[in-house]
Image (cartoon, rainbow, N blue to C red; front, side, top):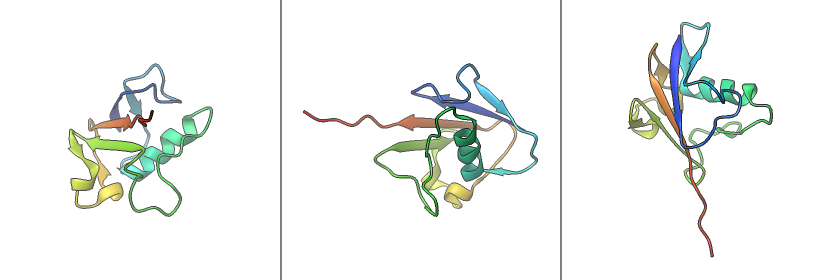
Length: 95
């Protein structure tokens, strides 16, 4: 299965790639994020253990330009070959 990855930062573990080829017929968004965490040299925590949603102050994630929260299954949404997952880290403001 090939999943296209877009981001507003360099995704650790897939720095020089625009897609990820996985030897799996089925994959949820949560499983993809866990896989990206495992591939990172320094673990990035996209999903906190046991969480049903992502921290909205840290991440925005879309599946094929649709916010994952609008998908009925949320983090458990099944991805299909060729899907594009966009991961955006949110900048913290301050003064």
